[in-house]
Amino acid sequence: MCLIVFAWRPGHAQPLIVAANRDEFYARPSLPLGQWQETPQVYAGRDLEAGGTWLGVGANGRFAALTNIRDPHQPAARKSRGELVARFLGGSMPIDDYLDDVVARSLEYAGFNLLVGNTNELWHYHARDAEAVLLPPGVYGLSNAGLDTPWPKLLKARAGLETLLDDPQPERLLGLLSDAQTAPFAELPDTGVGLATESLLSSVFIASQSYGTRASTALIVQADGSRHLVERSFGPYGGHLGEVEVRI
Image 1 (spheres, rainbow, N blue to C red):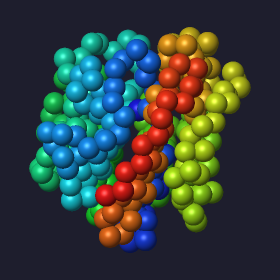
Image 2 (image 1 turned 90 degrees about the horizontal axis):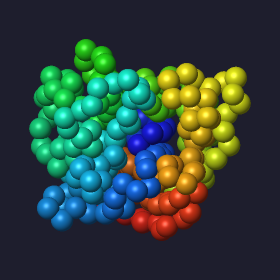
Image 3 (image 1 turned 180 degrees about the horizontal axis):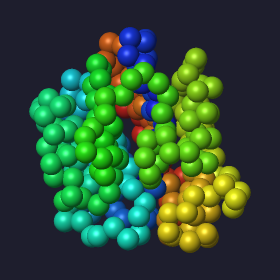
């Protein structure tokens, strides 16, 4: 998952609104959003290579999502980051205990940002920080650096989400995620991957022959704990592969 914009509004009729794009190599096998057979309380897509996921919901209002940290010089990891989301969604450990465990073992994974929460609280953990942060109400963006790092795609998507909060329908959230316009060269960050790759990765929706946005997900959480998810899947050059809708 490489771009997540979200509104956290505890006490609101819709306390959590999420719009997220998962960017990955098209050749990496995965399953679309669905109920997991072995842990039926989990609804998420699935990375078939390592078994984890990038975004999903679980029992008791649980929500989790992650992005990687873009750093071409970071060492290889022993474990897949996707297990961090899957383990939280399928488990029952209290959030603070779970995050303490993640912080203690963060060096086992390549760099990541992790969002975990439920109907009452939402936390963010950046793998290079000493501790997780309990998020106050607000509208946030998360890409492949820190929370609200002002990359062009993040600023554009976060501002777009703010305009939709009066009526955050899934179709409107997915439309926000479909913006394929790249940023001007002068506005690109320098993350060590070269100008051409920085440009490719600068759009909200990424499309190329081998790498791009594989899934766009809209999540709307109601005050009663019910969740509405819609996910669209894509292939090379942004070809539309299908759509899944879940209400739980």
